[in-house]
Amino acid sequence: MDQSVARYFKGDRVIWIILMLLSLLSLLIVYSATGALAYREHSGNTMYYLVRQIFSIGAGIGVIVLMINIIPVKMYSMLANLLLYGSIALLLLTLALKFAGLIKGTGRTIPLGPLSFQPAEVAKIALIMFTAKVLSKKQKTSKDLKVAFFKIISFTAVVCGIVLLSNFSTSALIFVTIITMMFVGRIPIRYMLLVFAAGVGLVVLIYFTADLLPEKIGRIHTIKGRIERFIHGDPNSETGVTQADYAKLAIYSGGILGKGPGQSDVSNYMAAAYNDFIFAIIIEEYGLIFGVGVIFLYLILFFRGIIIVRRSKRTFPAFMVIGLTVVLVYQAMINIGVSSGALPVTGQPLPWISLGGTSLLFTSIAFGCILSVSHLNQVDQAEQEQPVQVNIPDEDEEMKTK
Image (cartoon, rainbow, N blue to C red; front, side, top):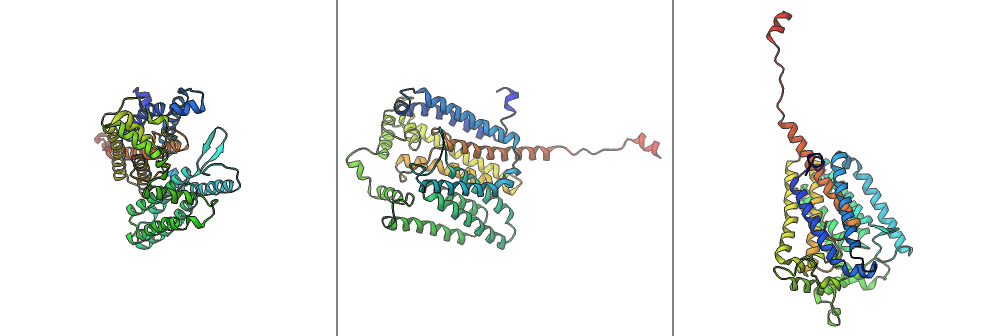
């Protein structure tokens, strides 16, 4: 890469390599997995979604470069509260539009012409930044940690409660991420155990009371249905093949070495082959060994995040990197777990690989924050390693002075 261009790609080089490898895989697999969608939506123009993904990834990389080179890390701490309040307002707006019948479908998105926008993605990053800010300021005494816990858990309950009505998996993802951040932030274990128990209790309550609630209250019945299908099996499998069955078939037919690039058959029958079940298509075409390699890339990302945290000399950037790294890795593991049948079916895209949209945009923002902190660490280290210059007065000058 030319030096004039490379100087803009600052931060951890390993993470940049991971991004480039995931980008290449994304273009290959999205082009293959969107064939049937292209015939349904764009008269068989299979290049449409490839071009769209190239544009989305290019825009995402542009956002990352812009964040690293222009936006100082301290700005995220300054904006954390405002972003959180704004994201809650957007979530409430989306909920109001859903109940008013102005938004169709699951009620997760606000339509903006040809584009769609998911406020939950804003809330996810905003809450992580807010949590990082609170934890960074409340570390001195046990009283500080107690105040931090109640402040964080109050806003987490609000955000997760609103998101839960339209997207259970994202709500759970945010909840577990914040719990992880508080664990690293030395919040007493007894507090987090109580919260975790409350979360499990809420899921149990939803399961046993869903039939008593009206259909209009969010996706409560969908949550119960997915839990039942995971435990007892999907009755639809007896009359037809479900998406989960197709995913298992793709993994089985891919075997160890896969069928080869563009040779997927299962993607022609799956409605979410390019998104929620894209990992199954990766294994079908490239094999189990390649699939393990993809998992390994996310694990490398996790360990590079730990290295960035350990090198950070400031508490807010360290906590922010913990939250953003964890949420990306958790999301990847959920997608992989759903594709392989280890987790109940839910809608979480594979970060930086699934077909682009709001999720890819905010994934790029997460990577931008992580790489910005990495670059800040490099600047701090360079300044620390600079030799201290001591001005020794010239002997002749001293004689003249005397």
